[in-house]
Image (cartoon, rainbow, N blue to C red):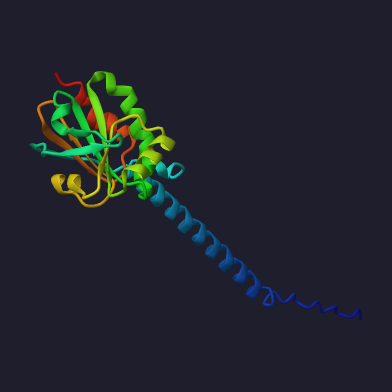
Length: 205
């Protein structure tokens, strides 16, 4: 009689732990990628809501507060040694920018302020940069190296900060042609915010 050949059944149980491990690894990888993608989307959304894109954080700007009160009395020596008064600039739209040579965000916004000033000075607009606390010689040297063309005042005793009730630097206040403070900023300004909020005041009759 022919012998029966008994074939052994292949044992697949040894592969089970490997397959389970691979499956768990793939699930974990997918979860990590999903998590990272969510964080990226959230970061981009936050950047957009702040007025900036993730690729250009320097475009960040605070939004000004709309205010309405008479401009304070303020007279200080300018960088050339002459006394100037806010009253000297009546009938113009004035942006008073309190800043300091040692303040990084102050220095960061200077090119933006300079460009905006040049674009609108023929429309009856002026920026007055009030430097808080540094001696005239140091401020003059900084102004020359930075090529600032708008007026710079020297404020050794922080009279401007006290007059406007401000503390942190930089801060800015916009005074209309009637002598009323209309806008107040605390923090760095970008060109978009200037055009959106200050230009309409410049164009008022």
